[in-house]
Image (cartoon, rainbow, N blue to C red):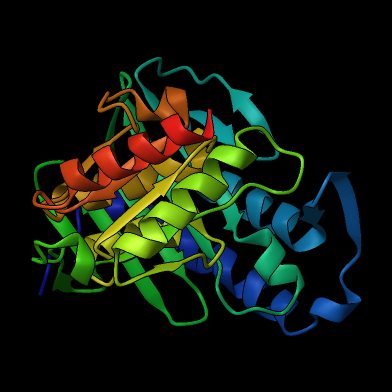
Length: 268
């Protein structure tokens, strides 16, 4: 059985507590009051309740750590070295349409480096977790990225921007190119779970543009600790800042990057 450190126990406990409310609200999704923040960008009362629970649990366990939440924004702590990066409900649109594919994502950053991550799928009761240098796990099972070597055999995940968002033509071009070159492309609507699935070997690769730190923090560490490679589309490592991500196993990362960059050039 995998041994979880105290900080992982804090993170998984917080995720489980917040998940109880999400599962309850998901069962009553038609009655949720929804406010519209922007084009196709919804925030629900369930999202806000989950954030409140996570914030309370994480601050109780580590009161000095800073915070970066999707809805609540950033808050500095007395400890200048550590920060929680949290998405209380990744896959909000799925949630609000009754699609059972969403997650809670918690990353712990130390001096700009992600050192621990948890992604929890409440519907499937799948807890993905990783610590830097200690491996990645699904519940108590060690994770490894897939071993596929050929793009033609690969199943790739992506996320497409909402209508009117920047880079939409580039997405369409890359989607067409990757679709015709690989075994298939999936778009399930939760970036955190997409990265977790790459770490688990369910997907062979994943790319997306314009994400936020809370979408990526935990998943980046999971993929790396499962033996995969993560970069931005150009090959850089500052993914949290750029928001553009490409994750795959070691054999497919460079070919997939080349394919996407070629498609983006044709869309310009």
